[in-house]
Length: 373
Image (tube, rainbow, N blue to C red):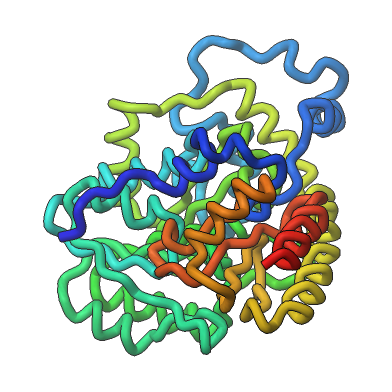
């Protein structure tokens, strides 16, 4: 059984040492918005002074009906009662672990991974079983290996699609077989789809919750919409048993969300196409910059072009490992770069975030540092 681990990724990104950084190359979200920008979208959705009539009494359980109606548009065949709004996806992940996992149960995790995919279930006493992606195959995991892992009783299978941190995105045939394997095993697939939507002009074969009753899909506004400070996420599923357990637990914990945040989230989703188009333009520009940089430094990095989302996961071929490199970058260049150890992936990779307008500035600072070594 994996011992519970501290949330070291968050400690690294927002801890005291990170305060040295004046630029970051690892933000895992699209270009953030100011309150002025969000207010503009709210005025377009609701008219002048859009929040004036919002009641600050207790909001509806599990999300305001207007917000769930907007979310429901992205989940054909699901009803509003099959959507639960949460305070970001960390809230959803903790709820899933508490509601659906018992001590000793097996949980398969697609790795490398966002740390809470491993750690929340581990805190419940689950046995965490890695299902690794393979760098040589553009970070695709092996479905035959998943079939073998599922021969033993398994409670949950965690994946993120598009994948964090590698940018892997499977095709329809891969998704169909993965779902078939999970259905046959009796497990539940937790599909973290929070990076779906970028780039906006790329077809998205999900959400997976619409394909199977054995899937719980997760999404939110933090990553592709660039609104992590709004703290709006959700889960969607046709798995009635799982949803009932989740709702029962949330009545004891956090079944209400901020009424103001829910209203602003509703406005954002009513203009979703425009926001995703803006963020896609930034992403495409940054991707071209990244391709040129890593090609020029192919003696120091091996770069696998991400298929979707805003993250990349280059391999470091320079001296030392990426934990050592990240500490040097903090101290000598005031640049924050997250090493692969925080993603359960050894010491030779780093996560690169391609979503912000200052991405090229961060790469230029890395370039200057590399010239010194």
